[in-house]
Image (cartoon, rainbow, N blue to C red; front, side, top):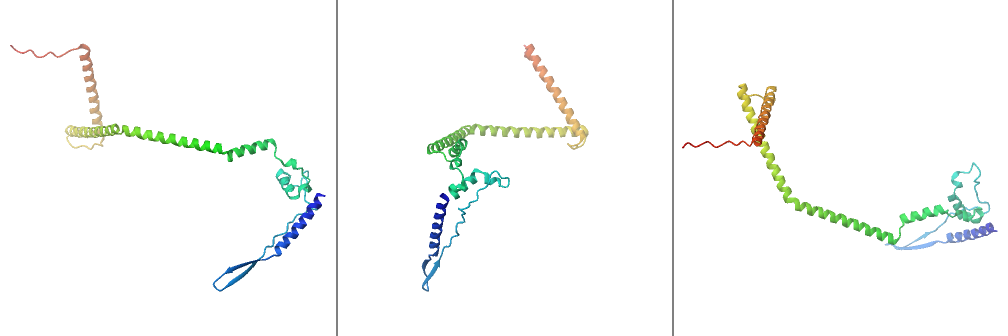
Length: 231
C-alpha cells in the first residue's frame, strides 16, 4: 500500500517537472544596437528511484560490502525509500552513549552564551594580569637603572685598571727577561714561559711569608717602639 502510494506521488512529481521544463524563460537585455532576446530552458535529470523493487542489501551475506551494513547506510535507505526499505525507524536513533557524546561535542564546539561570556571575561582578566605584571617589571627595572648603570661603569673602570696593570706587569717581566738573558726574548718562547713560572712561584712565596709575618704580629701584639730621642 505504501509502495503504491509513493509510486503514484513520484509519477505526479515527474509529470510536474516535465511541465516545468517545457517552459522557456525569455530574457530581454538592452544593448547599443537594440533589444536582444535570449531563451533559456531547464531540463532536470529524472529521479532514478525504483520504488517497486528497491535494492535492500542483505546484511547476512558475505558479498554485501561492509559500508552497506552500517547504520549510516540504513538511514540513507530509509530516507530514500521510506517504509519500503523495511528498516525500523526506531533503530535509526542514536543510542544513549552516542547521545552523550553528541551532547559533549556540542558543549565543546557550540558552547552556550554564558560559557562564551565567561571565557571572554577569563581571557580579558588573564591579559590584564599579564599586562600589569609586565608594567610592574618595567617599573622595577627602571627604578634599578641608575644602580645598574653605576655598577656597569664601575666594572668597566675595574676592567680597564686590571688590563692596565696586566700590561704594566707584562712590560716589567719583559724588562726582567731582557736583563737576565741579555737580549730581547720572544714572549712565546719556552725560556720566557719558564721564567714567568719562576717569577710567579717567587711571588707566591713572598706573599705567604708576608701573611705569616702579619699573623705573627697580630698574635704577639708586637709593636715597633719609637726610637729614643737623645737628650
